[in-house]
Image (cartoon, rainbow, N blue to C red; front, top):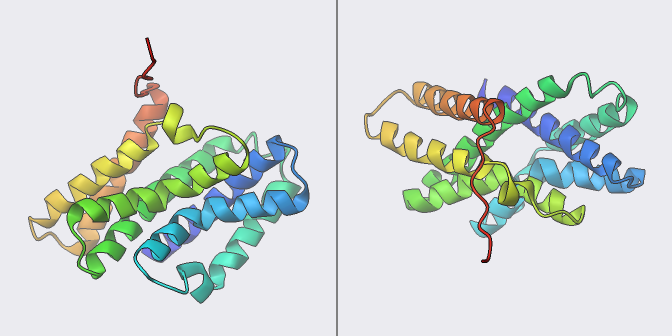
Length: 200
């Protein structure tokens, strides 16, 4: 189930990146590159920082195939995807929870401090979008509007808090990811944003 959710999240991130690139009127190669970095950029940066090379997607070509499929689906059905925006948002939200947990586990497996593990989880979930926005010449969305990264941090803190209760690992994953998904849905529904800091 965890791997399946990872696959869904990867494809959703790839399609999200492709749609962003098409809105910027990039050529097909540019759209593919943006789709690719959106899907695996955070995980790649995480793996490099912890010295895990070759990075994950280089060891499992299924990710390359998934991103390529997401790219073609986004290109072929770009006019219809507006109707499916809710579905894409749900997949993207699932990806948020799953990618955060993957980053946490990578840090735990090499014995890093929980604070660093939470940073790795946040990076895994968010930094593909940061790289996408920078390449598209935008200020990253998570720095100016969304509380995306904040939800990852809350999820990480919850994960380590529940871990102290010696819960079953599957239950721990399920509770953490569900809380993150619910927070994300509520943040969008009720328009929760962090206030902007302005120089007076």
